[in-house]
Length: 74
Image (cartoon, rainbow, N blue to C red; front, top):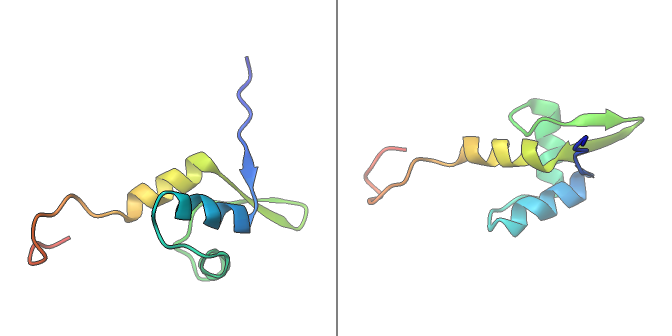
């Protein structure tokens, strides 16, 4: 059976990241798409879309390792 990913627009992608308990806004994703450093996205016509899998990879890549002190280096 073919697994088809769900595609999220920028607002929905930001909402998804926020649902994980992390700060993210549509404007942040707009800027990162321009300057780099954001999650992988695709274009469908003029619309930018993200997959949950790509958002999860981006989030996990931005998280530090577990820390037990603020003096520990990330």
